[in-house]
Every structure is written in C-alpha cells, then in structure tokens.
Image: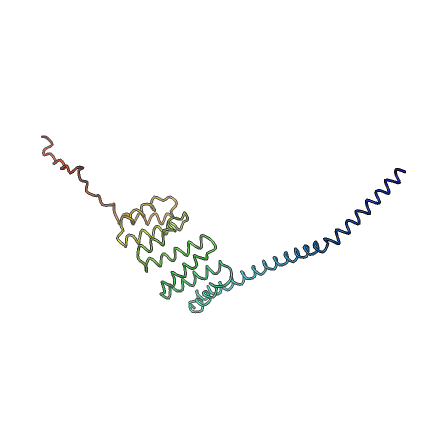
Length: 240
C-alpha cells in the first residue's frame, strides 16, 4: 500500500506542477514573449544603427578626400564650398577637420580674422586634445600678425600651461612676439626655459640658444649702498 500511496502522491504533485506551469504560461507568457521580441528588435536596431554610422563615416571620408583633392589642384572656390558644407555635416571629427581646411583657404584668400574664427570653431568641436591644440596653435600663429601682444599672450596661455608638445611651440611664439613687442625680459626668460627644457625638441632648443645669443645677457642694475652711505673711494697705490 505504501508504494501505491507514494505513486499516487507523485502523480498528484506532477499534475499540480503541470497546472501551475500552464497557469504561469497563460498569465506571463505574453509578457515574456513581448520582452523577447523587443530584445530582438533592439539588437537588430542597434546593428542597423551601427551599420548606418559606419556607412556615414565612410561617405564623409570620401567627400573629405575629394574636397582635399580640389584644394590640392588649386580649385579653391569649389574646395572652400565643400569644406564649408562638410563643416556642418556628419561625424564631429570630419566637421572639425573640414573647419580647419576651410580656415586654411581663408588664410590664402587674406581673410585672417575669418581664418582665426574658423580655427577657433574647429577647436571647440574637436573630438580629442591633439586636434583641439592643433587648431589653437594655428589660430595663434595667425593672431601673432593681426592682434596685439596682450591678446596673443592670453590666447597662448592655455597652450603654454599644457604638458603636450604643442606647449613648446606656444612658448617659442610667445618669446618671439614678446621680443618684437619690446618685452625683452619676458622673451629672454622664455627662451631660457626652452633651452633648459629636456622635453623640448632639439630644433626648438637650438633656436632658443641662437635667440639668447642675439639678445645677450640681461643688463646689470647699478647697486647703491644701503642707508645712503657713500661708496668707499678706491685706494691709490694700494696703501694708506
């Protein structure tokens, strides 16, 4: 009787489990199926978006290369129009590069203020530090010929404070322009820093050394005795 009872109990338990499974499936099945379908749609959508992004990047790369070809051929008008269009379309990296190329054409056309604004705009949207500082130093070189020294110094300061290789170019430009502006002490001090900077490129250190040779040492200031005391007169014959 015990075996028959155990068998009966097992059959009842199995039946109850089947009924519970059917009940759960009826209650939550549509939700589980919906979530699974949503997951599949999400995966498919993400893959589609990635494919679109890759295709867009490839398309903009080709258009950017075509605009560069126009520029190299001397067709500045069409190249300028293409770079201007690309500067407002597509991935940020191509927009930043297009703005720098557009600014370079403005330099050739003599529009220095427009070129500075273009490089500044490229720096604002640059996707990485290297591209941003490249745009900033290019703008600074133009500003050196079009803006006063205090304005240029303010523009250069963030690059000088940077620990990248661009900082040495910024220091050299600051020293040269300080020299032109009559700020010889600042020029000498900056050139000395560059000459002693072990991380600076050898060519920049050599140029700094040449500049220091031309500038010469700092002038010595006259020393006056303390408390207004007169300086002792030189002795004659070395004896009293």
